[in-house]
Image (tube, rainbow, N blue to C red; front, side):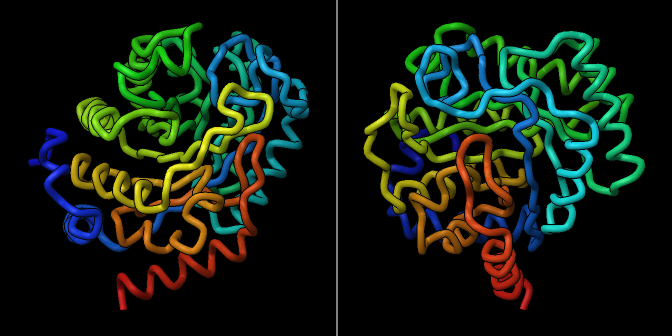
Length: 304
């Protein structure tokens, strides 16, 4: 079992990729899981996450709007299904919604579950058990709440809430009977040890899905001008996460297009078995058609 940084330091990136591909085959099989998200409420967030364009502390000139209407969200869920996503997540800015917004979102989730036929997820920030149970009863399947990085490195990227605030929300979601999607961002200046520690935390929390985002240095945020990490470093990280977390879905998300570029397919050889399609919160992705063509080739490779 891989637990320490030293377990990985003695292995080259190619060795890690080969080991991770075998682990993916053995523990997670040949399925590629696709999901899509909507930026359901944008901007005016009072948290100071240094990577995020939606914080009030940074001048990023993004679109700012309140919670989208039920009709808008249902139309976006329909679109997500049409482009091949199996899951659709409603994402809102801010530390967490108030009771009225939670009820509105619960109503949308109920309709998505009953009428559209795509699995509903939500990423609404820090919530209490009562709100999470309400969402589950409405038909929510999975709650998304990233830990972002390791406990040690976390104060370097956020100061308005703590690492433990995030852990408490994840545990509350699990206690409410929800599946949990939780991962983070790499390329923030963290070390490989921080990435190993993040993977270990996620494994110990027993989350179901792990999105790996790669920093997109957005204009106006404190990370503007940050140099991208290499494709090799990203592939190495994906492999480490697979070897640590075993059978979880490891999902490549924001930043994959700009950093991995022509190596995106290799991410699936390095242990990934999921992908976010259709774009991100404030960053445009590539076309769903391109992503679906790549996934089709990956499936042939794995199952041919």
